[in-house]
Image (cartoon, rainbow, N blue to C red):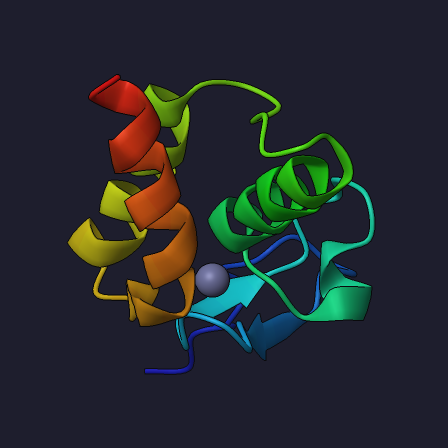
Length: 95
Ligand SMILES: [Zn+2]
């Protein structure tokens, strides 16, 4: 059974997200392959930076941050690296 393994678009490298540990690939969005983050962690990293640069304000919303974290967890990733961000989002959501 010779089957050509071509599940992924040619040119998109498969790599392991250095944050949640999931196998992922270059989504073509920004520089996520360069930083070795999956799409969700890449967005969360952006939120964390935005929060640090803007006195604790999120770029999107606490709901979006929690949604991204739940996507990582539902796909079997380890979201513990976002524990601080999750706590901050939950706090904002409860205000
Ligand atoms: Zn990730």
